[in-house]
Image: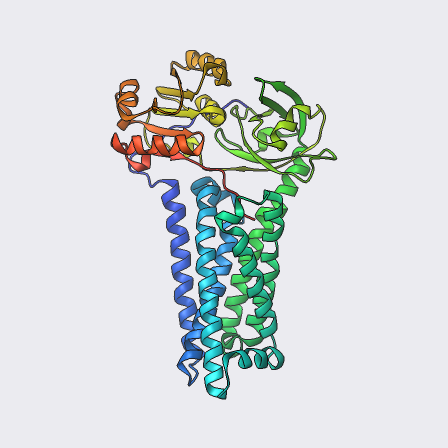
Length: 445
C-alpha cells in the first residue's frame, strides 16, 4: 500500500474536531436533561438537604460514566480530538467528580442527621451499618480520594508511569462499588423502570466503551498483525530507529503523525509501555519508530533484538493531515520531535516548509531524510541551530523564513518549552488557532 496524501477539507466543511467535540457536548447535555427528568419523576424528600444530595449523587454518577468514555481510547474520538485533549478533559472532570461526590456525601449526611437529631459522624456510622450499599459508597469515595491524590501534578511527577497506572486501575473498582450503591439506594431505580433501564444503559455504554477500546481492540489487532522487530538501526549516539513488521499491515488504520504505545515482549521490558510516534508514513509493509534515550526504557531500545515480539496499542493521536484547513503547510520540529514531522512530510501535498530546530547540527536526527524528501516533494527545509536563548524562532525570524505563515496550516512537535514559545510566536504573527496543530503525550489510566 502506498502512502495516500491527504487533501485539506473544503473551506465550507465542518472540521472533524468540531464535529466530535460538538457531539460529546450534545450527548452530555441530553443526558444531563434526562437525569433531571427522572430525578423529578421520582419525587422529592421532605428534607431539602437530602434532595440536593441525591441530585449531586446522580450527576456524580453521570460524570463518572462520562470520564470512562473520555479514556476509552475509542478510535473515532481519538483521531478527531486527540488523546492529549481527551486526557486533559478526563483530568478536569475527575476533579469535578470529586467535588460533586463530596457534596453528595455532605448533603445526604447532614440531611439524614438533621432528621434523626444526631451528629453527622454518628449518622455516617449508622447509615454504613444499617443501609445497604452505603459502606460500598464510602469505600469507593476513599479510593477516588487516593487516585486524586496521586494524580495531582506534584505527586504525578514523582511516580513512575507504571506505578501511577496501577493505582489508577483501582478507579474501576470504585466505579463498580459506586454503581452497586446506586442500584441499592438510588430512588430513581425503585421509582421507575424507565429510569432503571436508562441507568443500566449509561453504565453499559461507559464500561463497554472501556472494554472495547482498552482491551478488545488492542488484543484483536495484535492477534491479527503479530508485530515483530525487523531491525534496530542507530541514528546517532543516543537515538535509535526500530523497524516493525507484521501481517496485513495494509489493513492497520495508522496515519502519519500518529503514535503507538509500544511494549517489547522481552523478560525485562514486557511490562513497560512507552509512547513513540511513527517516524515514517505507514506503507502497508512495515512501521518505524525513532526514539531518543531520554530514560532507562528508551536507552534499552538499542539492545532489542530482531525477531522480538511487540504488543502495540494504537494507533492514537489527532496530529494528522485529517485536520488540514489550507493547501500549504508549515512543519516545525524541535529535537527528536522531528519523528512525526518527518512522517507528515511524506503524507502532505501542496507546498510545504519544514523548520527543524536543534541546539547543534549533530542533534539533527533524520535531517538527511528530511532533505531527500523535500527534494522529491518540492518542499523547503530550514535547519535552525543554536542555544534555546535567545530564541531562534522569535516572530521576526519566523516571519522571515515563512512570509506567508498566516496562510498555512502549522504542525508543531517538540519539547514543551519550545512548543510553548512557538505557540506564543504564532499568536503574535496572527496565525488563526484552527490552523495550528499540535499534540502532547499525556496518558491516563
